[in-house]
Length: 403
Image (cartoon, rainbow, N blue to C red; front, side, top):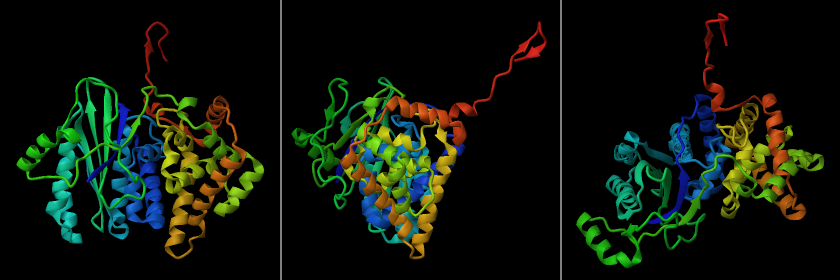
């Protein structure tokens, strides 16, 4: 077993409103289906195991680009959306937050009975990854979310998250089985994060004597010494700033969307009659599906697909979001009956945006982009969680009026 990544995220309260949760389920399911179609379930597990890709996925789905809430909301959306298609896709998501995480063993046993897995081995792996991140690495984070994802071939990935009340930070841990290496080829050699005093790391190479003794007592010895992997650390500020985004890459997306000649060619690739705002979103969705690992170093850039529920970088454009879902779902449905042209258009669009980036290296005025998005927000039915709060009414006894 290898841990494939770690992400440090600011703790973020609040909830995901139903109008966004429903759309996240639809878009996340569509993105997963597209990845499985082109890269198989192993390809999806590899992506899921990368903290940078995971954060970009949450951002493109309309969640707050930097917060801990992405983990719960993304995994919840994927579990809801993929459950009806689990047998067809060969992809099963177990566990969740709190009491749902404790139900992981029962879910794994139920799936194992249907698929012929070694239930005891999967349950043991699930518990071992949780114990290592919660106990063997005494870094101050207590696990409260655990998702175990397994394919029909028996390959697995784990996404789990712990919190530290004192620092108001969350830490997400990613794991994948040894057979899945196509997305992240080498693990890191240590855990990287903010200094919080002395950390007892019982999975460090120098702790082999203690590690061996403890694992022998528990009768659970991993194949290799476990070490941390790709590390993502996001800032505490909520707003998206120019330093959070690769402006050249964002510029290539906007150029393809808004420059007429480039836009017309991009439309031809997708075989759709699309407005520039929808094309902008679909270009970022296409990159989530087809992009290489190096493309996700700036997950904040993907929030320019469908905004954020807290208005960062702008309110969620529901009209555009629904069009993105419709285009992707239409392409997936066509591919099921043998017409792959539309779904393959996403790959062609991703390649075209990269060619524009390399050939033209377009620059983007970050402030102008934000001003434009906020200016058109109302026309795209832009919405945030603040719009869901009931308006307070006060009574003025002197004037006998409500205000």
